[in-house]
Image 1 (cartoon, rainbow, N blue to C red):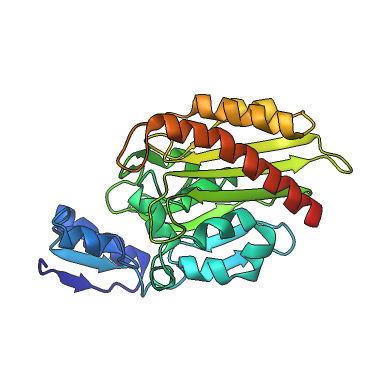
Image 2 (cartoon, rainbow, N blue to C red):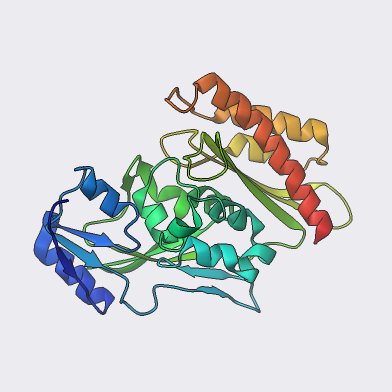
Length: 292
């Protein structure tokens, strides 16, 4: 494997300065599960790896007990999210996703921030966070800014990050009462496999009934970037959620998707499974609302 210098900054400003100083020869690294693989495969050849692991404040899960807002540090591992009681209880759609990424060994090291920055269409962590209306906080030479996660991705492997910027935190707004969410990674096997599709649904229903007041339908591996099926969402809102309504929402989402043929699945199959999985995840949302 190509030799490189491993730099260990102790602050965000120091990390940004190192990348600015070394330019294209430097890359940030957190868990390393993506970066090191790319180096071994010759897809990346940095002279310097700038570690983010020793910078205080970039990890951890914090839910405000008064507002319900969730804050996730970018260096939080998938395993930390999987084992979090707060995530499992209040954000099960996210728990569904992170508990099925790779193996336990990978989840112990890989970070949620790295999963987003890598920006592959098959990133499991992105879909539920988009359904949750998450924002990401970025830090660079121009200071700090926030971006809606839906608009963070520009294309496969491409994001709005400017040179030297670091994704520091993920912010998830509080959920309304009587909200349920569910995510499914559709693959040939449950783990150690990239998804053929990722489908996340988040539904809010009125008190004492099944009329939908708010809907989110997010899809992964259905377009060059993770996407929301906006027409399906608009169709669901205001409807009483029965089997026929969820079936139609799935059909609309399938039509909105921009699936393509690949080695893991044909476009026609992906489109059909969007239809089926949106309906199934909608049913799972309702079941979780009933259990709350």
